[in-house]
Image 1 (tube, rainbow, N blue to C red):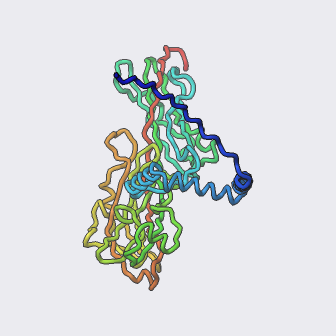
Image 2 (image 1 turned 30 degrees about the vertical axis):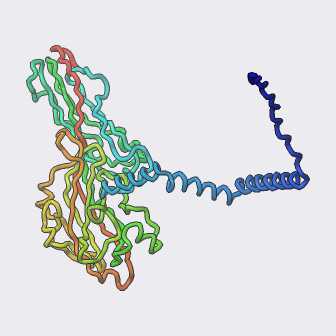
Length: 402
C-alpha cells in the first residue's frame, strides 16, 4: 500500500519579548544622573563666563589654532624662514601710511600758454608724510626753450631761474614749509613762439643717521637660538632687529649671515656683522661716510676681512672707554654706485656690507652671558628723481606788449 503524504506542520510565529518594567532603583539612578548633568552644565556656563574661564578658553583656542594646528605651524615656520632670508632688515617704527617726502611733479602756475615777456612760475608738488623734521632741502630748476623747428635757443629768459624760498626747511607738521616752493623766471619779449620745458629736482644731505643692534654674547654652545633665551629667561622677539624710523635710507644691522643670536665666543664659530642700506624714498642716494662702533673687546678680523667694498673699514680709532670706532675708506665709498630710484633703471635699491669679527672672551667678565650693541652711522647725499613741465610761450607782434 502506497505511503500517504503527510500534511505540512503549521508553526506558530514567535511572539516578541515583552519589555520589563523599570525598577525603582534604576529610575532613581537616572534622576540622579540627570541632576548631576544639569549641575555640571550650569557650573560650566558660569565658569566659562567668568574672567578666569574666558582667559583659559582664549589660551586653549590659541594653542589649538597655533601650536596644534598644522597649517598655522607651517605658516609660522614659513614666516621664520622669510625673516631669516631677509637677514638684516629692521623693525619698522612706522605709525602712518605716508612717511617721508615724495616729489610728485613740477606744475606750471597759471596758463600753459603765456605771452612772451611774461613771468614764468612753476610750483614743486610735494607729498610730505610723517618723519620729516626741519629738513633743509636744495631745490634745483633748469629752464630750456626750443623754437618751432625744435632747435634749442638761449635768448628766451632775461636771467636764469630762481627758487623761492632759496633753501626751505621742511617739516611734516608745517604744510606752509613745503606747499609754496616756486621756480620762477622772466622772459624776453619775442616775436616767435617758443616751447619751454622746466626741469626740477630736490637735493639734500642727510648727516649722521645712526642705528644700533642689541647683541648677546655667550660661551654656552648648548643653548643656541630660542633655547638660549628660554633657558636664561630673556624675553626677546627673534630675530633681533634694529629699528627703522622712516629715514630716506633704511639702515639695518645683523649678526652672521643668518642673524641668529646669541653670538658664541668659541674658536670654531666665526662671528660677523652685516650692514644693509635700503633706499625707501623716491630718489637716489650717494653714500658719503659710514662709521662702525663695536664694543672694545670686539674687533674686525683683518685677516678675513681686508678693506674692500665688502668690508670697507680701515684701521680703528679709539672712540671712548667702551667702544672702538671704524671709519669706512673714502676711496671705497667714492667708487660705490648710487642706489635707489632714478632715471637710470639699472640702479639697485640697496647696498650691503659684511665683516668678519674677533671677540675677546673678557667681554663676559665671568658672566654666563652679556648684552651689548653694535652701532653704525652714515651720511649721504639724496636727490629725488627729476620732474618736468612744458608750456608754450606765444610770440607777440611788434608794437604789442605782453
